[in-house]
Image (cartoon, rainbow, N blue to C red; front, side, top):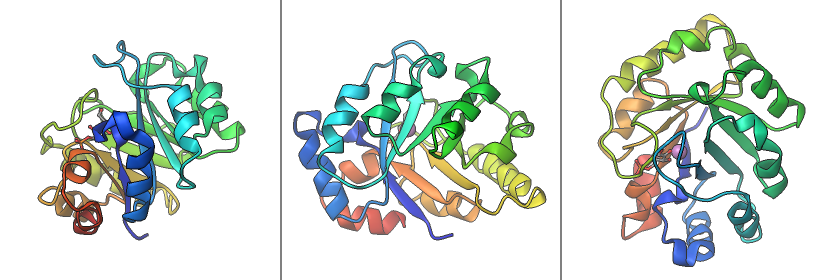
Length: 215
Ligand SMILES: O=C(CO)[C@H](O)[C@H](O)COP(=O)(O)O
Ligand SMILES: [Co+2]
């Protein structure tokens, strides 16, 4: 699998969000990573379905929607209707993880499960064969521009082993948080297929160069 780069628009300039999305598409992004935060599951509030619907008009790139919200099962439909092409939910955000994963699958789009830094990889074992993607959070979710947590590399290796032992060839392993020119080689070496990056891309002078450096 070749490495995919998913810029997180959390670090974009919200006052010109449509332009930022177009620029990132021109610069060679593979997916647009959209961080939906509810001010409850994480201590920050970002955007919801109306903003997703608005930027859906300016790009054909896949929308990778990362839900950091309590009880995602209550609002998944609105993100899909707004234009999400894939949805990732947090294992810690619902007591009905299996049901919610299958709900997204029945809607016909790829589904991922994200793990916070303190959530063990073993918690994925009963469900990993149902997933299209596993997201290992490499920072505590809630904010852009944080420092990469080194233990994440061990967790990535554990997911990679699980993927191999269960022969889940199509499963994508994604990382999110503190990914930059220094940490990208570490996570790729440990098995990451999809790199999310906010500050390292939107904070750079040359978007295309920053994407190429990560890739
Ligand atoms: O999910 C997220 C935070 O919860 C963001 O996707 C992530 O923080 C990306 O930003 P950066 O690359 O600047 O760390
Ligand atoms: Co994210």
